[in-house]
Image (cartoon, rainbow, N blue to C red; front, side, top):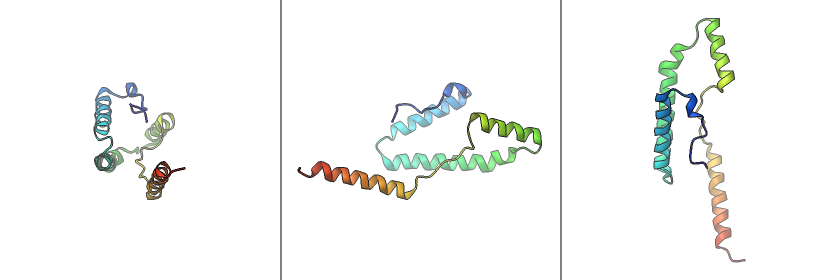
Length: 109
């Protein structure tokens, strides 16, 4: 893992740059505390859903020109914003790998 989010913050407006840095710092402050990081992820997901449902959907294009501009932005700057949940199977696989590594580290050769 790197020390910084792999995002070109300079392309963002200043207030979003400050927000991104604050969120990144919140993550750093919670590093090593899975419950606190989960709390941060839940908050971000909640905010994502709220912004999408309350504000973004109201602004969706109502004419072809605006629809074209939106689709063009998505094509040029990245896909539709989505917060993906970690699958439980992935989490269990991490646990199994960690457990296997622990067993190998403690067993004599």
